[in-house]
Image 1 (cartoon, rainbow, N blue to C red):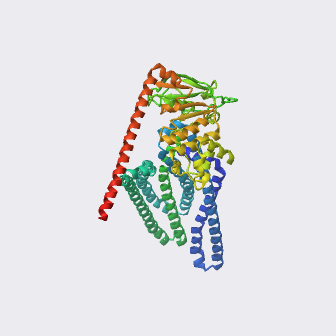
Image 2 (cartoon, rainbow, N blue to C red):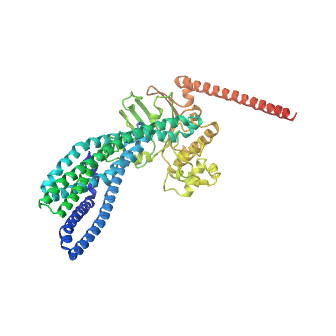
Image 3 (spheres, rainbow, N blue to C red):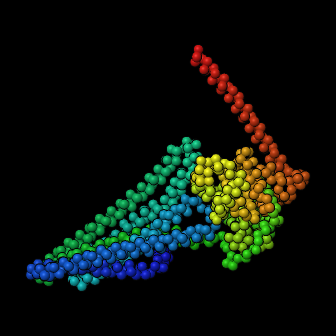
Length: 606
């Protein structure tokens, strides 16, 4: 897993080699400083050699300048290859996210995907920017300092070895505990970020139901859990730091004890002793930093596992390697014995047959759960059938490119998504190359131009997140304007007017009537009154097209569609009656209110 994560750095080998080269020279400069001190103590001070002191001073200045320059160059190189590798990783994630298709979005919450693209990528980026470069640098320093210590004094080097082993044996336990808690914190943040996303997205509902305190308690419980995990992480990290200090000081005591005896015996000079102590401190700093880096990297590796798992998810719908190309999309759609179900669930469509002629308007009706919206998803190839095939102009959909297939289809959903930008840019989404004149013409055709021009900023007005500043009918007419710009051969309507009031529905329906002229149309109908004039109506029952015909034909048959239509008429009549009763009650209440107000006013004056 670590090799896979680091593989994103292989494209930048030159930067890595230069980085390692800078690290070698920097380590060599750090090695030189204690050696200069040894010369000053053993040669300059006893002999009062000012010329040698000046030489040492100049050499130290040169080494320090080189050290500073190469440290800046190394940091720049580290930033370059870490940022580029992170960009490559994020780009790979975005590309794969597009390939996973519709099924992924239906099965995974948005909060989880956002955490994956932000938190997990940031975790692996820290591997590129800090852990891997620091590991390389500390390893180089460890080898150089250890080699110099053994060369200078093998006995003192062996005496410091037990302290090093003590730290290396005990420290990883506390580092592992700390990593476990910080990893648990990061994992819990996936769940916590989803809570935050829901809290922000549902602010209207929370206020409407006076549930702000309930939501606050829910978020605070998550915050308390995160704080608890972080405290445990910090506790183990402090224990590890204390252990590092204890072993380092214990080693210094041993070096001082036996070093003093060697100096008394004349086996070690004061300058060599000072240099050895400095090398020992640098060596212990390098080893403790290396152990910490190796332990902390486990968290990044855990995050890399999440990304690796995501990037190796197999898309359910694959684009053909060599797609067929239709010279012109006429709009003939045919279902040939299609059987389909979501995941491991039972099939919704069973041996479904249907042929839609170019330019024909077909409505899908039926009770909930019989596959109406599923038919639209199969036409857009959001999913592939388990059995059978769907054809467009005689060619199976899985032989066409996504670009041609979806470029020839216009979708108008019940819940239209608008970007948090201007009205103009939301309409232009249908055709990014559209001119201003084309945008205005599309808005006029969609019956959207009148309400757009009433905004203070007209087409430059911001619609808010998901179009929150617009009414449902206005959002739908913006979506229809998009379709006019896109000019598709096929239009799929998924209950496009079901969530609208009567006035908005009428305005949207007028815009749709203009849009659908001459185009193959497949509509999921919620209100049968909107599809009375369609060429054919298809009643879906138990995954089959149980009845197919025009509205008059199906009503004349007095079959399942007739019973469905009668039930709809009765339900609408009941709703109208209820609305009328409420209207009368409201009128009476207003009248009583006025009378009450007059009575109060009169009483007050008396």
